[in-house]
Image 1 (cartoon, rainbow, N blue to C red):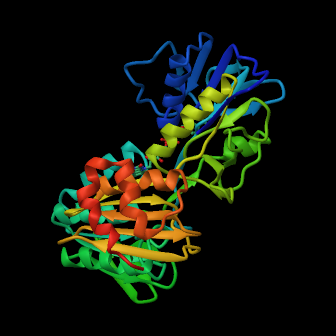
Image 2: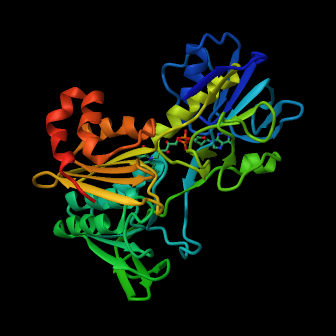
Image 3: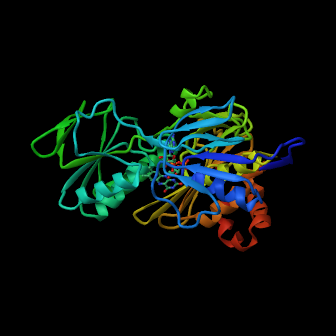
Length: 396
Ligand SMILES: Cc1cc2nc3c(=O)[nH]c(=O)nc-3n(C[C@H](O)[C@H](O)[C@H](O)COP(=O)(O)OP(=O)(O)OC[C@H]3O[C@@H](n4cnc5c(N)ncnc54)[C@H](O)[C@@H]3O)c2cc1C
């Protein structure tokens, strides 16, 4: 975070937050924690209100439109709400295939209610197709195996998790799943779904196969329709600058709905992770109070699949110039991608402590001479140095 106080930041009296998910709630908490004494109105479509609400007016409603020039919002049930500044924290929704044939047994993964319905279906089912071999699909596949279901993952890219990990590692992750009994179908196009006597039928260029039900894990789309309808710029998410400001004065956005410039090359990025929702909301809230803090995250995600804890730091990037990897013992791997001598990407299997040390190098874009690597890491995390000895001997 790059923190500068805005020279003439007028503190607002009423702040409207649209969305009661992670980002919306964290923004409200941050406003109060930062000493904001004005009115905070949070409009959340989700009825699950937290018990602790630090002097927040929580309206269980939906914002239909925002007039940013005159600073008011239309709520479906509560009418007009005036504000001085507004945060859009409208999150995302599950991407759905263009055609599911109205099949009841096709479940998206997003809301608690969808999760509950899915759990009920798993009881008594024997086979499941997971459409989408991304992080959520694979996590579900591992859990479904533990539940005793026969699982087939259907992916239309050449390899699983293709937006997050290099192909060589994807093959190993696939082998891990296969060793636990998961089957994979790599189709050249997204599959079709129709009803069948057994439940559902999934059609790919490899033929049709019947399952009791399927889970749709095709990623998330941003909820940016409110912004678009209100005349605020959006393109795969609500466009914000490094300070979480949208194209409309006084309107900010954070979390899974926001598309922001990431890194030195200011790559247009939308992140669907808890860490991003929480951290970006803090920056947005403080900036609404007159600070001028840059949001400069290092994306991180963690997933548990079988006995592997997989953590990924940075953005998987085809522009990586050099890969280096160290595997220690059974199932422990640290893989790093360097560009211009700086670590821009790291993937760890059961190596979380080392990844925390590497994080500092990524955050500060420290140029790394691999021969000097051990010393650098010792400086950052001396207690981890013994285990990090292994990194020194690695060559790309
Ligand atoms: C199945 C699944 C598993 C996941 N697992 C992980 C994980 O292990 N680790 C991780 O880091 N991330 C995970 N994520 C992603 C993470 O949950 C999201 O990125 C994060 O919750 C986004 O928070 P948010 O506040 O931006 O949006 P959301 O949590 O989507 O909240 C947005 C809220 O805004 C409301 N809203 C939208 N429009 C309006 C409107 N016009 N008026 C009023 N309210 C509105 C919505 O109803 C919603 O309640 C997972 C996501 C899914 C779907």
